[in-house]
Length: 279
Image (cartoon, rainbow, N blue to C red; front, side, top):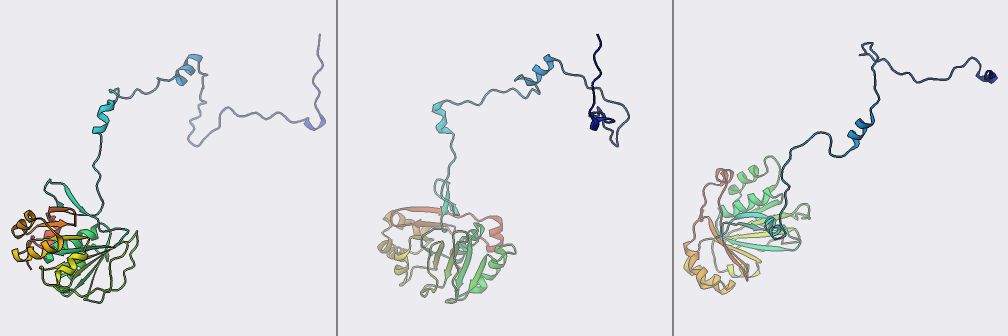
């Protein structure tokens, strides 16, 4: 039995169905037609089955018991300026960038004030120095930012508004002698004011009373009486104050007290010299 030949429409005569070429030549082709063999069912199962492929290193799983989880911890403290180490050899951190006004008084020498200024600049704060001895701060201001203007020195009473913000905190250091005048720029949110007193004079109680934090280097026994009446420091701490080393200070609030030893880095020693109480 014969079947009639398939008829072709008038518009399809002379046209052949398009076929996808089995191989397309490329500029680097060698002329050989690659042979692609179909995969067997066993090979397909091997590809899609879990557990096959590159074998990585085989180690014991990291498993701890519920009682051991508490031992996996990381000590996290306050952020700020590391001013030294305490009596337990733990870092002592001074948080100067705060969302509230913060006043600090340092009874000490130029060295501790400049270390505090240099480390504040290292944390990203803009440091403004109000001083009556600009020659003692100019070299530090030029070297502090490594070419960036992060520390500025102003004469006494000439500090302009700094415009502090959460992204650009300010630390104002007032090195204005034993009787600093009232500053035009005061503490603000994200702007801390550090007032440096060379010793405890007759005007010191006013500054000590209004400060949230006080740092005291070595002072004389006569000065300890003023500190006791103003800050209420216990007798055992008062007896230690006249014997402190040049790089040790007592940092205290109304409730807490901590001795901190400031160890300068090599860069700080090159800029500021060795630790000293008197200038």
